Length: 195
Ligand code: 5GP
Image (tube, rainbow, N blue to C red; front, side):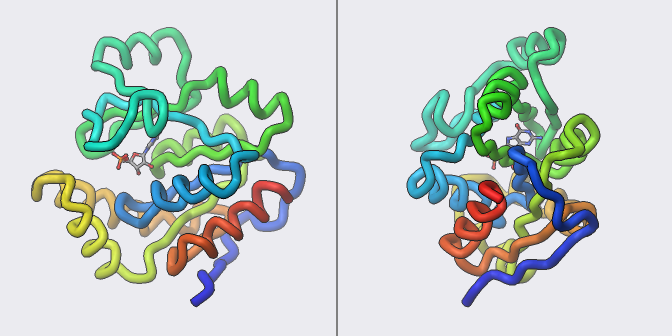
């Protein structure tokens, strides 16, 4: 089934190179991003810094740069982050320098970040395209989050709480893609990134 595309508040602007992908935890953002990495190496994906501990299989410098709290504090103090946010008890941020370098070189650039980060990017880089990845249903989101099996119940509960807030923010985005098929979402994202 193709994913539905719902226009948001600012559709149809051209000339952007920076795309922000956001949406509730568990919606499948990292699966979409992994598929993009595999199928579209021409797109540059920003690697965030986080104070979260690595999950099994995650590698420093690939999915994230893993930092301790003092290290993250230092990045904030030195103005090294384009945006950052606290999410479910950990901090996450986008290193500024590599994003600006890739944009200057004309490389299609994608950030996969939470709602608070997307709002910050909208303020600082209003030309960015903000894409919201929506689950087919709330039940689907909950079962994906639980099915992942990597987080204890209290962490899942915090992520579901954050998910309710994030879902309510869909209308702030330029457009929403419903994640019914990873391939289809990737296809649409690539079309947007290279528009
Ligand atoms: P996870 O712990 O599941 O990898 O990520 C948790 C949340 O943090 C996800 O919603 C993800 O999009 C978000 N996130 C990842 N990197 C960043 C970042 O650099 N900045 C912000 N604001 N959120 C991020």
